[in-house]
Image (tube, rainbow, N blue to C red; front, side):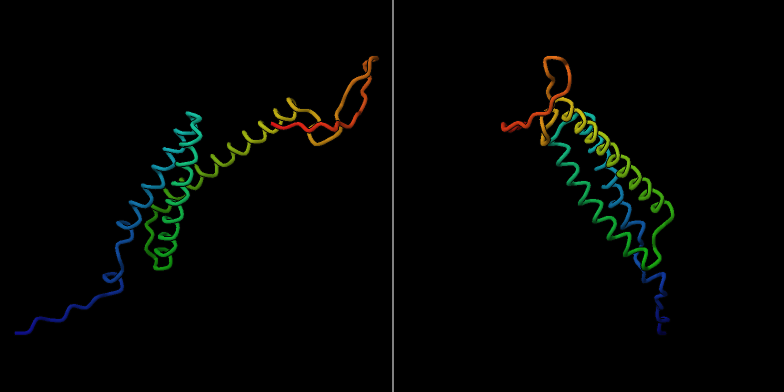
Length: 138
């Protein structure tokens, strides 16, 4: 007696996206934790390393999520976790931008007139502008 042929439905043929996406998302989440630790320690070599690793992990994960989304296979929980990771990345980027702006302001205070006429004061205490021919380098 012949056995009935097995028919593959679209669902059966589609890969289990949760199993494929989970490790990619875990890698992104771990890289975020590693980067946050390095930022907290102010360890520049580690910050650069973990930022690069995060960028690679995120690119790989996003590519897989896009592919899964095209085939309708992204579980809602994984979407939420990816959105949370994206929000954490945006928050770190914002904090870095604020820190950079603060550093720029501190440099402006420490090196006034850098790139513009030098501000001096006369013996009477009034402001006097003078161009400086010397260059200031950090």
